[in-house]
Each structure stands twice: as C-alpha cells, then as structure tokens.
Amino acid sequence: MTRSHSPVLFLDQSTTTSRRPHVRIHFFDYVFLTLSLIVICGGCLFVMDLASAHSSGQESPMMQMLNNIGSAIPALMHGIAKYALLFLASVLNSALIVGLVYGLRALDSKVSRGPRRQYPMFMNLPRPSSQNVRGRKAAMRVRETVPFLLSPVFR
Image (cartoon, rainbow, N blue to C red; front, side, top):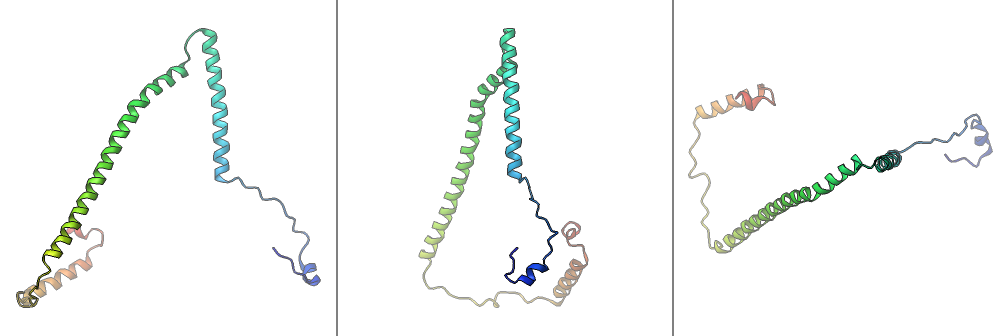
C-alpha cells in the first residue's frame, strides 16, 4: 500500500490498523520439513535396531531386509530395461513406418505427375430418389430426439 504525500489524506487513514506478520508455510516447506523429520527419526530407529542386534549377537532384521532389497534391485532393473527397450523399439518402428509412407507418397507424386484427366463429379453419381431423401430426413429427426450420449447405443 502506498501512502499519499498529502497530509490530509495521511490523517484520513486509520491508525488502528495494526500490521501483523502473515506467516504461511508453503507446500514445499511443509514437504521438506516432513521428509527431514522422517529421515531423522528413521535414522535414529535404524541405529537403535543395529545397536540392539549387535548387543544380542544376531543380524538386524533391517539389515536382512536391506540385503534382500539389494539383491532384488538388479533383477528389477533388468526387467525395467527390457520393457523400456521394447517400448523404444516400437516407437522407432512406428517412426520408420511413417517415414516409409511419406517416402512412398513423395515417390508416387513424382511418378504420377503426368497429365490427369479431370472427370466431372456429377456424371457418375446416381440421382437420389425422393424416398431416400425422405428417409434421410426422418433419420435426422430421430437423431435429434434421442439423448446425445446414448444415441449410438440405441440406434
């Protein structure tokens, strides 16, 4: 808010409005604080689990779980890589097919540049009978009265 340089307008403003700081935690701040709390508490629990397993002379359940996950990661990465490569191969195959079609169209347009005979469009078309026109008009009336989304289902 800007203040006017005029003393009359300055006096007109109320002095009772106090400015209090508007503190607002944004979404990213909340996410950062929550994740840091989870990491700190999780780390403390992990260290306590390791200390308890060391004092009892057994292997920690958390370490067993981490070893199992560590051995499963290469197999998981192999599967992900295989399907990612299959997806990329299908994209490349589609691109090659599109390129081939464009190339064939260009070749066709170069080969068939000779003089073409233009046939009038109205010579080969049969004239519609009055019954066909009436049937089409009735069908259009039916389409207008049928509900929009369900019309293909009930036709």
